[in-house]
Amino acid sequence: MNPVIRREFIGILRSPRAFGMLVCLTIVFSLAVLMRWPSDASVDLSGVQSLQVFRVFGYGLMAGVIFLVPAFPATSLVNEKNSGTLALLLNSPMNGASIYLGKISGVLLFSVLVLFCSLPASAACFAMGGIGDHKFLLLYLVLGLLTLQYTTLGMLVSSYVQSSDSAVRITYAAVFALLFLTLLPDVFFRGTGVGGVVAADVGQWIRGFSPLPAVMEVLGQSDMGSLGLKTLPGVTRFVLLALVSSGAFAAWTISRLNHRIFDQSRSKGRITNEMDGTSRLLRRLIFIVDPNRRKGGIPWFLNPVMVKEFRCRRFGRAQWLLRLVSVCAVTSMVLTYMAATGITSWGVETIGALLVLLQVLLVVVLAPSLGSGLISGERDSGGWELLRMTPISSFRLVIGKLMSVVWTLLLVLMATLPGYVMMVMIAPELSLQVQQVLVCLLWTSVYALSVSAAVGSLFKSTAVSTSVTYVIVIGVFLLPLLIWLGRDAPFGFDTVQTALLLNPVGAALSVIEAPGFESYELLPLSWWIAGGVSGLMFVLLGVQVWRLSRAV
Image 1 (cartoon, rainbow, N blue to C red):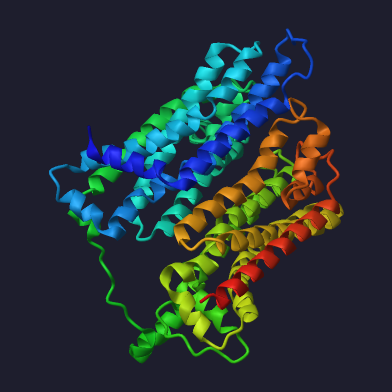
Image 2 (cartoon, rainbow, N blue to C red):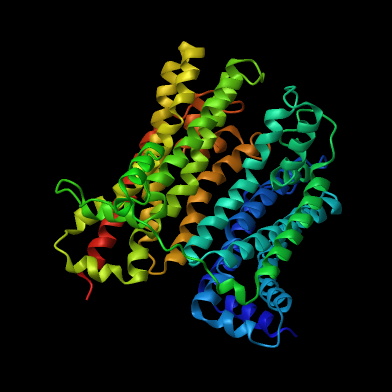
């Protein structure tokens, strides 16, 4: 037996978090089925009720895979590299393929346990009748391949990064890209005449990377984005692309498992202020923000903790923020331009929904990445003791930390404002709705930041805090949308409306009258809930910082 398999698998099982995760999943899956279990002794011969239970179970199982699987492979290789054991493995008689097979097998075995936790709930769904064996087999096939795809992707990311928290951030960002962004090309090109038939076919195949169309097809709902056209079934396309992409990710990672993985070329560096006058003038004409220019001192009116966060964080540096803002601004302008020029027949409401989802996706990816390590990163690196020795108060420390994330999120949100301006120019009657949408998005940012910062402060390890924060934030924002997908069957109107009230995203989509959200009245209660939860999270963060600053 490959010794790495036993070491990896047993190491995961010995973690209290892994055991608690398996127990919680078993309870959640069982409760999801019991919520829709018949309350009397009658049996629904039509199979409608059993299909409703099956949909709750299927979406819950998919969410569990998306939330939990990527974190373990993302930290697998980078932890070995940082602890020095990867060099020992590479010096052993095992080759790169054997090492990779051992590590990925250990992670996959744990992922199989995650799927096994759903078997009692799956057996209950099957016992209700009305659902064929092939439906369950297809669901587990799709989710099994989804697990394989995310595991190989996480291992590939882990082979490149230098820290476990960076691995978790990048892996979850890639997972979101495969889950949602792959749906956009098909939405753009199908039926619009843009790019012809070839572009439409390419968009369909890119859409196949997302598991959502395949899972919806298995659960008996219309394939997302199919628009009534006869195309290759979503399950078949996803199976093919998942196998190909997983093989490509695995081959890529194995090719890196040699001694060259430790080679990291570093630039000698150069400072603009030390160049000759002509070079300095040329760089100031070319660059809006020169990354090689020596930074000035911290003014007295600025919070030094905030400045420190900006200068030590990759996304805090101005050149990276400008790149991110420019991409967001161009994307929002392109979406609105396509609606204004008649390239698409979506309408202003659909364009507004896409802008909202784009901003929410950016917030969900950025907020946990930036907010989870505000306190845990200092504790993990030893910088917290240095902060405690400074004359900075706990209140000013928290404000400085939070403001470093607030400015980043505000710049990203403001980058999409040109799209909303064009919407108002196209349809002036939407000005009030656009204002309400912007308030909802502002509350979304505050909500995500407060949860990320509060949850991240509870852990000492940056990697653990990042993983847990991503799971919680994704759950808060994604689960209501999954419940919305099951509206009318199995969830009723009141259940869906209650779920959408849990975060301001549903309110933003209902205000803009996105398709499927028109009938829900979520304002102003959604704002009050977001404000209350955010306030509690900020209080929790303050109490935790006060406690840590007094710790001996």
